[in-house]
Length: 253
Image (cartoon, rainbow, N blue to C red; front, side):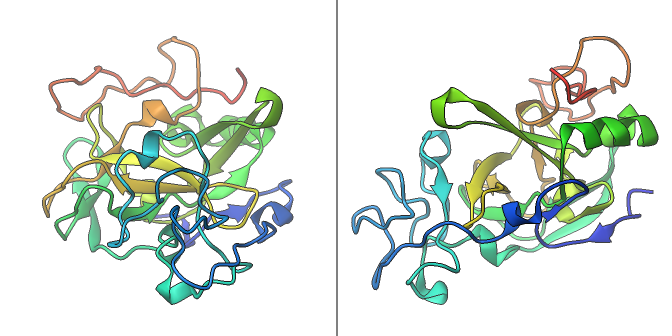
């Protein structure tokens, strides 16, 4: 069932993944005051701050190509007073998991959310493409498709690095976010001192209490063929609906 999983707050290393990827290995900043772009905090790589004074994602930050690095354990700044730390403190806005018409379980807001509010991490097991394929043959395409989130990053020399996060066995509330073709959440990839990414779900716009919290699986799902296998009709109900859930059939390009 959808509830049959082990709850974890943050992403963990799955089989054959080096646990060091999730250890705090980055150098920290040496700020003794405000960690901001204006004060040249070493963790802020953009010309604008990652978060505003209210802890919301700064407008325009999600489309900036500079990596979003939060301050972390190796930094000189004081954790509680540093505004360049948000995702690491976890869920602060009230949400609930309940049935969603036509989609099984879903995640819903119990508070009014502002644009840029952090909702939750998309936590799961960090796994290899080989493990994705193994689980796919074991669990079936449809089950795994609902969960595995793919993060593609261009690193130095334009090499592509792909990460796979699977919350189907171990995960958090992020696994209950359904797909929408016009979602209220956006997927933001960030780092908290580790090589491996943290995937944050942030509000794209103001969200009234009671709304279902969805993101666009097409922006983050595994790429696959266009065949009918494993395709599910999209139930998001928005005018811009594309009709089918994005297909995430295989981890091989």
